Length: 285
View 1 (cartoon, rainbow, N blue to C red):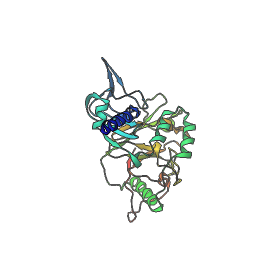
View 2 (cartoon, one colour; view 1 turned 135 degrees about the vertical axis):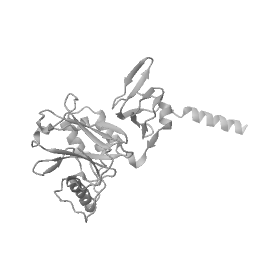
View 3 (spheres, rainbow, N blue to C red; view 1 turned 45 degrees about the horizontal axis):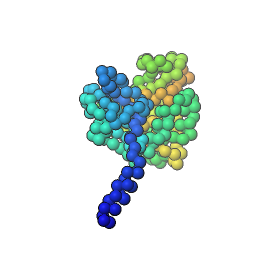
View 4 (cartoon, rainbow, N blue to C red; view 1 turned 180 degrees about the vertical axis):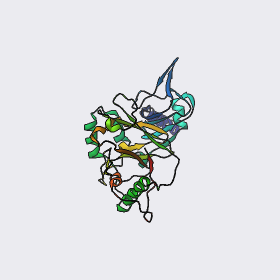
């Protein structure tokens, strides 16, 4: 009798425990990724929040989808080709949690809020950025940039690329400092690692400045707004800038790091010193 009552009590407790359905936010989409419903295929876009466990997802060759699972606080990277229910894809996907995605809440806040680029710039500058890793690492990062600019970097497989887009979303080419409107960037990370990125603007006189704001306060989180997931393309629409404010002929250099760095160190006007340490950075123009 006691065993029956105990089992009944457990059943009652279980029945009143609230169940939840996982909620998904699309962080990044790369290549052909669609939601299928009846005979329709609808492209999945960054910021979408309507997907659920039963959503039918179709991924073509070269496509990938990165989702934030808000209930379990995890990231899921999906690249399985074919059509399948989202719940199944999630079970088969690689997931990250803990310290590696402590920046997600800030990232989603930046992605989801509709603000002007100026206000977003100011808010992110105050709350996010690159964490300080010490003077030695800063000098090593500056030396890496100097090595690249001097043509002394080791050749690597190009896994980073960047597109500059007009206010209408059209690709820009040539000297973009001649463009009079605001510009957004789309960064593609084809590597297997999460990469922190920033773009260095180098004037014809050699002066350097960062396009995207950072905060070097050690007490702040890492670069929430500047982290690109593996095998994804992210349009940094909240970080628009005005290239016409820079001198004509300014050179733009995308830098990526698999670890947190103080990006302001890239602005140090140092020449390459082969006797000094060089941080493992990736570059693209």
